Image (cartoon, rainbow, N blue to C red; front, side, top):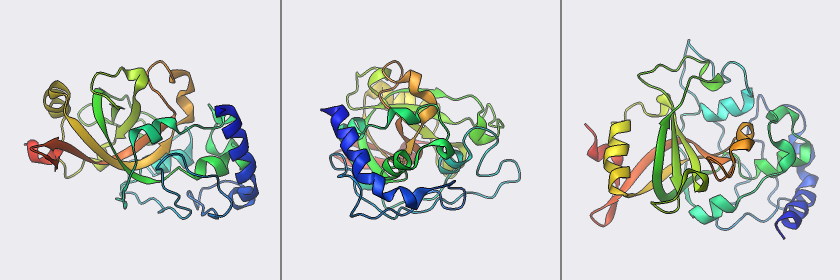
Length: 248
């Protein structure tokens, strides 16, 4: 059933392929006609024209990073906030992808595969769940291998339930540039949120990471991710509160 759904979806959206032909350097999120895309999964919204990314000016690292996939690096390095749409964790974890894009840069995806992924790539969303793990990432291509030890990017393991394993989690990434102005710290997340098994709400951009296909089922549930995360809220005292309320 799942394989059949993928095949049908790819056939439906192949008519949009001409809109996405060639490299996406100047238009990362190309508009797609709402009439020819596949029906979104669960409560994922259908947003044919998605906001284009914005970045902080930097003389250390351009938006495209250094190496890797420049198109996906631009999306990962964005700092703009969005009109976040509520999406259930189940809908996010059910979202699939064409196997043939795994380990490939965006410029090497077929037009039909690019059209399929572009339905969801860059959707502004807010999702409720639990942080079950947090790791500080090593310097990488998106950050020009310049991320400092004092301010690395964070890999957040975001799950439906508080006791889920990494293999059941969606990856959510917090970047140094999107933490500017926040009081978030690793100790605050581990000692307050994770230790208390508190429900959180993450707001950010839906992202696709074909590089880590071998990790699916081992240390992550999907190649779809939330990256970057722009807001973290905690459910306390019967309401959602920004994590900044509990920081110093």
